[in-house]
Amino acid sequence: MLKSVKVSDYMTRKLITFTEDTDLFEAIRIFSETQVSGAPVTDSQDQLVGIMSEVDCLRGILDKTYHEEEVGGTVGEFMTRTIDTIDANTDIIAVAEQFIHRGRRRIPVVEDGKLVGQVSRKDILRAVNDFVSNGSKA
Image (cartoon, rainbow, N blue to C red; front, top):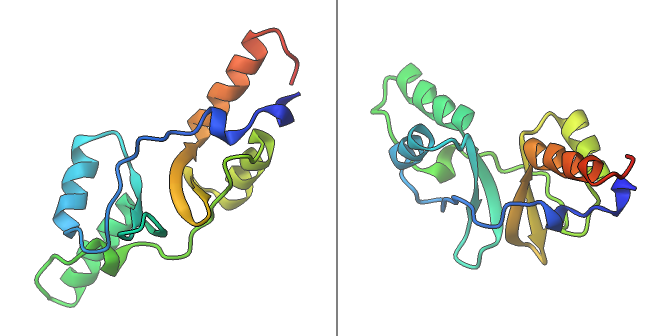
């Protein structure tokens, strides 16, 4: 059954991450040059403190422009601090439910508060495809 497939089997372990003091324009550059649309923000102990997305970058630019301030700042100023996380042992069906109900593209995977990876909607679809391709029934 699909419930036996764990996030740890399909999550991405090598991630692009930011720190709170990463320059906003550096985040924009990275998003522009990669296929990544959001990235976890960690502190010096790899504790997850937020998520920075393309939308957060746009919000930062618009906020400063609206107030007629010089555009710029840090990831920490504009990142999303309220984050949903999951454990690496969570089954992919539970994660699929979170994606449906919360509308997220990706969910950070943590163990003891430390970031260990990230799972995306594509990762879940890949897991289902592998499961079905191996002759199993969902």
